[in-house]
Length: 304
Image (cartoon, rainbow, N blue to C red; front, side, top):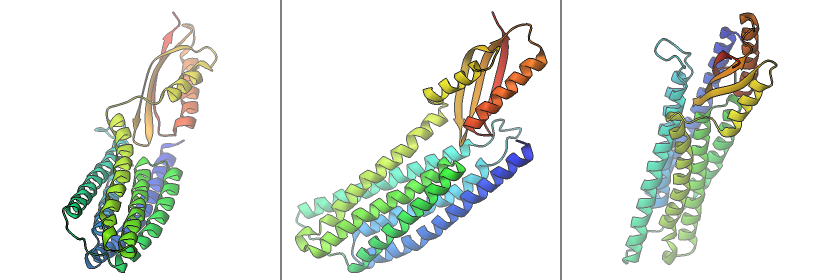
């Protein structure tokens, strides 16, 4: 694939991510304003917590929009392996925000439950809070399906992380709906369901945050590709006639693509043209598996 075609594909990918993220951010903006209104005027702690969660969604949308342009830049003199790890960093930021929001919602819920245990009576949530929760479920689930579909099409971990942020908000609103609905329909003694729902939802949010953060930590610490992918690389190299003993394999991820460095042996009488041709064909086959932007560095040694 030519450099011009590669850069064009990356530009199209970047625009797709920005367009999908912008659609999600507009949805988040409308929802967070409605949720804050419904939570304040509907006397619902769970809805206010849900609004804060939507605020984190909106903030992370902005992070994605800013970082995707950096991640899509080609390699330069200061970044020989490209800028792919900006995408990893953006994904980590989203995970950290989710972790913080989940912890805050959990703490707020426990404080409210403790107050009830101490004899404080909670106010009944209003129907406007229930309507906001139901609307949030529908909107956020749609945004999750749409964003996840496009993320798989362009192979963007950052956009998939944002999709899961939409899903976590839908789960948050689901728990919020149960808590608010129970508090309204079952009477004063059941109003504690509102903060309990917030606690349950916060556990889901924290789980999603960790699922996003841990792979980013591995990548930032230069963890190798999974064992089955490394085994595939070695099998590809061995499949070429005259090539043997692949060794010193080093792999790592760089955003949505990866880097592969490997040594292998060929007969000492092999011409430079022949060795070069084999090397190119090995690289082509590996890029069919790992993507056209895969960085590959091979070193040919004579058979011992």
